[in-house]
Image (cartoon, rainbow over all chains, first blue to last red; front, side, top):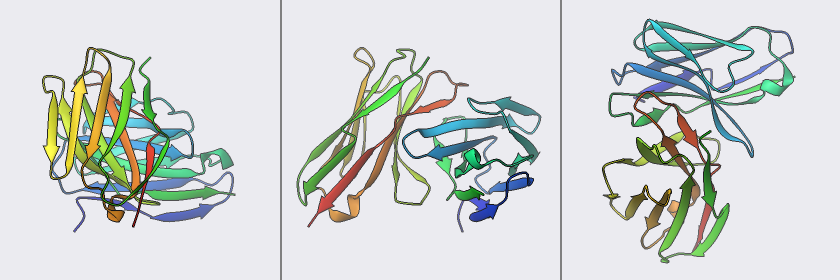
Length: 111
Length: 112
C-alpha cells in the first residue's frame, strides 16, 4: 500500500463549485504539505502543517483553505473554484529529517 | 527570496552515458537539498537528501553533491538507462522549519 494517498486522482468541475482534495498518510509523519504544479512554474507551496494544531500559509494560499483532521489526514479545499486553479495538486509529508515524500497527485480541471 | 535554477532544462543522451544535472540556489542559508524524480503525470519520488553538513550522498548509480560556498548541487547518473528517463527536480530548504523551494526541473531522455 502507498504511504501517501490522495483522493480523488482526477476531478473535473465547474467554476464556482466547492472542491475538497484529501490526503492520508501511513508514514506516521507530523508534517504535511499541499503543493500545486503548473507547467513551466514548477511546484508552489499552498499550505503546510507541522502538527495537528499548526496550519501555515505557503506562497499561494489565496483561494484555498485546509483542514488537519488528524495526524494522518490533511485536506485542501477550494471554496469557489476558478479556471486558473486547474493544476496538478500534490500532498507531501516529512518527519524531523525534513525529507519529503509525495503522494501520486490529483489532476484538477476547472471549466 | 530563495530561487533555485536547474540547467539544462532538457537533456537527451544515448544509453550507457554518464551524465550530470545541475542545480543552483541563491540562498546560502541552506538546511538541506533534496533531489526528486518525476515520471509523466506521476508524483515525485525522493532520490537523495543532502544535509547542509554533508558534501555528497550516493544511492546506487546516483551521486549528489553539495557545495554551499558556490550555491550548487549536482546529480551524477552513471551508466544511464532508458528507465532513467524522467524529469529530475532539486529542492532547497533554507531552515529546519522553512519550505522547500523547487527548481523547474531537467527533462532527461535516455534513448536506446
